[in-house]
Image (cartoon, rainbow, N blue to C red; front, side):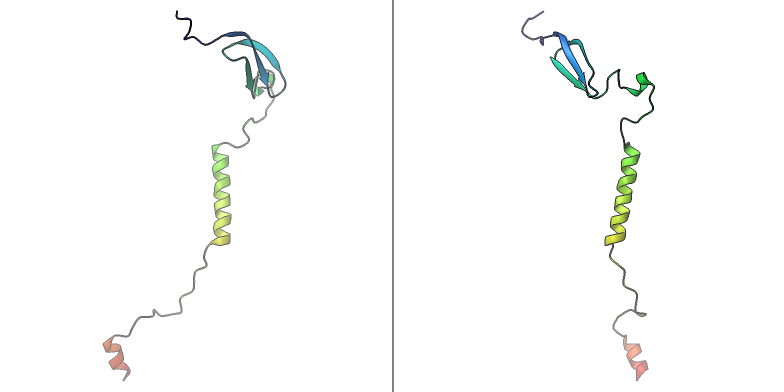
Length: 98
């Protein structure tokens, strides 16, 4: 194997979780930061909690609600028809009026 093309391997790489748990493992990075580890993951702890507060459906529903509120607030109000169209009278109509 060529010595200059391989990344350096750290046998004592430290993994730091957002819950405060730390442990060591082997990696090409000296320190690894993770959001969820085996001490705080719901599958391993048995807790029932949501890691992602809004999924794709929740985000879509929230956008739809904002759009409906915006449309109700800023939609242009339609003018009511005044009865007849405003068009010029034809020759026949003008002759009938006389």
